[in-house]
Image 1 (cartoon, one colour):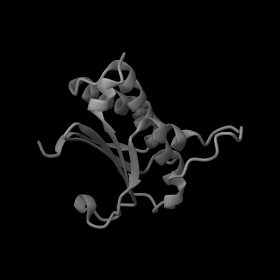
Image 2 (cartoon, helix red, strand yellow; image 1 turned 90 degrees about the horizontal axis):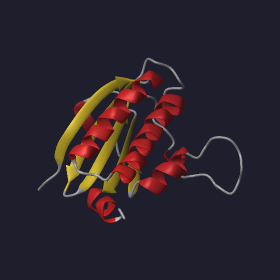
Image 3 (cartoon, rainbow, N blue to C red; image 1 turned 90 degrees about the vertical axis):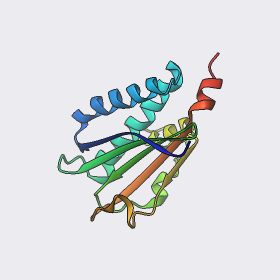
Image 4 (cartoon, one colour; image 1 turned 180 degrees about the vertical axis):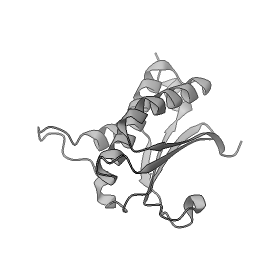
Length: 150
């Protein structure tokens, strides 16, 4: 079966929107029969990615738009986040050294630990919208998540 769109959500870059996003992601994961523990981790990773967009791409302003698209591509769930902020330096996806103890900065590490693949996409022509700043795609095999359950 080819890639299938499961959900699309448009929301503002306001942290009060995160609860709605978590509920949507959780609902989709339930529909895809993802076990509880991996689902909780995936919800956490998507929440963290959204929060990073809010804090770092938009600078904690409420004026920006974020689009979440969720796909199933042959058992791999794809979470695509699109924002309209200034393009981000792609090196920010490199996790910091976790052996250095300091507050914050573990979000990228957490996302990479949970997801199978995390990439920035080329924004040209994506979504057919002007002003697309950044597109982050996170992938995880739902089949693998099911197999890892005790």
